[in-house]
Image (cartoon, rainbow, N blue to C red; front, side, top):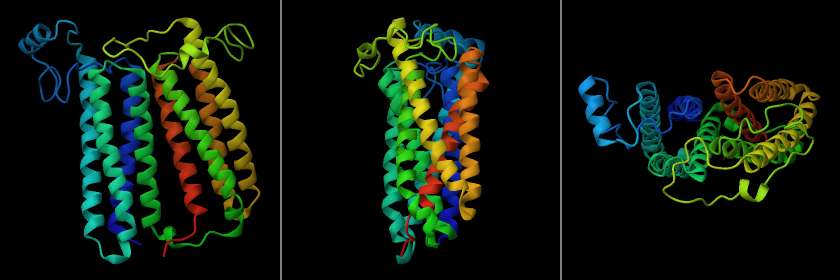
Amino acid sequence: MNPALHRLAVTAATVAICVIVLGAFVRLSHAGLGCPDWPGCYGHLTWPNAEHEVVNANANFPERPVVGHKAWKEMVHRYLAGGLVVLVVLINILAWKSVSRWQGHRTLSLIILVLILFQAALGMWTVTLKLLPIVVMGHLMGGMATFALLLWLAFRTGIRGYYEPNLSIRTARPWIVFGLIILILQISLGGWTSANYSALACPDFPLCQGAVWPDADFLEGFTLQREIGADYEGGVLDLPARTAIHFAHRLGAIVTFLALAYLGLRLIRKTSLRRSGAVLLLLLSVQVSLGVMNIVLGLPLVNAAAHNGVAALLLAQMVWLLHRSTPRQS
């Protein structure tokens, strides 16, 4: 057990989920290009605010005039992400200065540092490549991966990192691993849906455009490599391609629901795992409800951002279950 490293990892994981939700809020409010340059905003450390600053910014970036409410959202997100980078650096300093019994956490801390630096590069490319979908999706998945690894570090450095898993959780481990893989794939589909502005391609529910199986162009919808230099704000795909992406996300939601619901029901039958199973089922129910509400209500901003946040919480619960089922560290 390493109390200092544990507390720092918990703090960093908390900041990470805030970055994820705020990033979703920025993207969904169409503020991803609120600052057309990086790392500053129209050449400023914050964003143009005074009248003369706005005039100069508009002159320097005529293709993207200043929109104040978009610029400040983007910069707040960048600064919060920067704070997370600082926390991960501190984690590495503490991990590498620790005594020998904590050396097992050094590799993980270093992996998180490399990942978050790559995340920073993806954040830059998100702006400079004008919301290229594969970069936007990669940025989301990198954020989720950073959050998951920080949680793993927090769990393994806490007191429960030294508990031997009981028989009930050990026998459920294959289903936990399977459910985690399915959830990661579904989050990726959600990221691709958002990056291609396909969330409203099917405005009805449970049907899609009035059909059980709508007209969809899966080949075009899932072409990952796109032209460099085009402006992807608002999306460039036609309706059949967007429909394919949205419909695939719906199908993925069904598979994810069945896999995690089975796992939750399996866990809830065991006395020692009843709480974990109940939490998983609760989060799953909330996430499905938010997804349906996104369609029925026309993607309200707060609801859509919450959909991203609960996805992160589901991921956190699955990482916790994986930790509980993993043999203790020596």
